[in-house]
Image 1 (tube, rainbow, N blue to C red):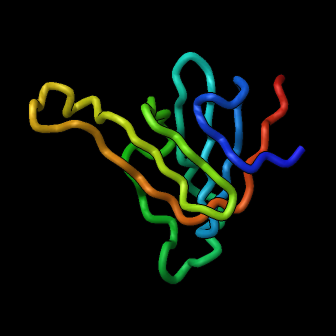
Image 2 (image 1 turned 90 degrees about the horizontal axis):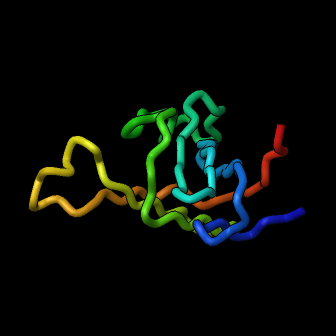
Length: 108
């Protein structure tokens, strides 16, 4: 089944999202939607994007906004735990390179 868009309103489950830079994201849609960037995925554009570390790689980020659409940049919005007490901080936003595929992972 081809999935063209993934948001917190998508059916519950675990999804894999691949981007044009070669990054891989694990998205779990449940009561809270979490996103984890999986480092070590083979980058397609090694020279520019490489495998640069991102905030809390491998750790699930609880996201208030998640939108992955095939062919478009992905958008994640989350609150950094260490900044919750900062009255001037609202949230952080991460944009991905364009999404190349979205697939529902089989349940175990």
